[in-house]
Image (cartoon, rainbow, N blue to C red; front, top):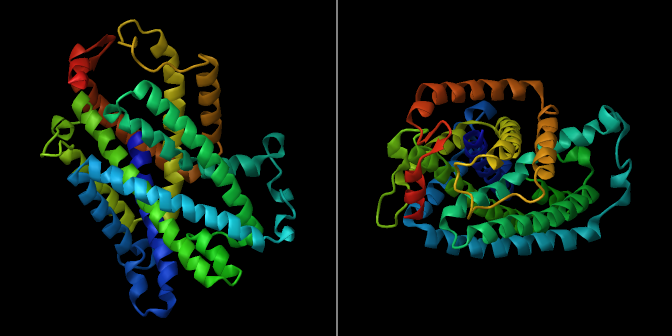
Length: 371
């Protein structure tokens, strides 16, 4: 589920980057250029900007973490500034009639009359992947028990506030029925006749997506690296190489798969499956805490312990599972196929090579992590 989540999310954000670039270039006036801004399933040849973006980021990741961190810090500052501009300037273009009706009747069905909200929430749940990826940096943080937990909590608060303000301004500028586009921020300012601001917002959105892809490539490569290190996938995936001490093999595999997906698969297909993978992973992580807390063979004396146990993991697990039920049937079918493939790999290879055997935790993992 995590591999599905990270790989597809990386590709999806890359495709979003390409959509904003297309808006900036106004490709309707550039003959023949649209063929390299969409994959074959959308009438094009290959989504070239998305592929180039991933190649650049793959190169940055191979250079090493210090370079990645410097680039990320600068771009995040620019991204926050652009978000602030959108929210503040957009306030002057809000039309109150765009909020009427605030919750249309056709969506007031299902549990508590909130089916529209439940479906929308399950549809944008992959926004939480950004917080998930912070956990992938744990091995490279000096004091992960405090810093990773605080980092996730602080970013959830900041992002929730910005996300809500952005949504309020966006739907106030343009009626929600017109917002089924891949570049909504730029589209909103173009819609109100501010093409100059639309370009600025488009560039800022692309910068934001660049940092998002940067973090996702890092997280996805570290994810399959950890599987290779622990034996769930072939050992060569879990090797560190090069003067920069990066998991080159894991980076290469993650990068190639993500480039293929970004180049040839539409955004709508990618986004729907990401939500399934994310929600499934969150469900298992929450419920998995309960039996893990009772394990006596795990070295947890210095590890992070979830507060509010068992209430928080139970609420988290039930909530995540509920939103899985709100996904479209075709999404659940595709996710079911992926899950069966994953189980097949696990039972034919992973379970026999894993360093965690039965109830006994292999102490070599601890030694290697400490090293």
